[in-house]
View 1: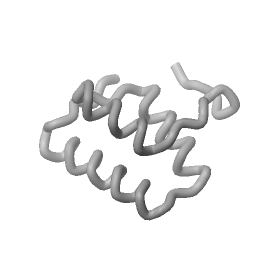
View 2: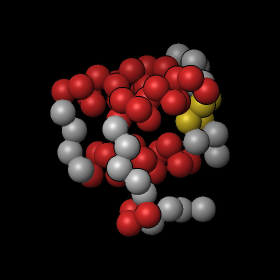
View 3: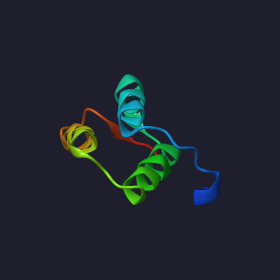
Length: 66
């Protein structure tokens, strides 16, 4: 199920990353929220959190849930 961008709430990248690391998984909703954040522009702090998430996925620390 795809969530339209109009209905995606504005949540900080840091808050999304914290939730993903807390549950050790990234859901389709998490991906939608991150995509929305990227479209709104990222600062250096956001880039840090996204890089950290990518490393976690690559190292198998975060499960990608479909």
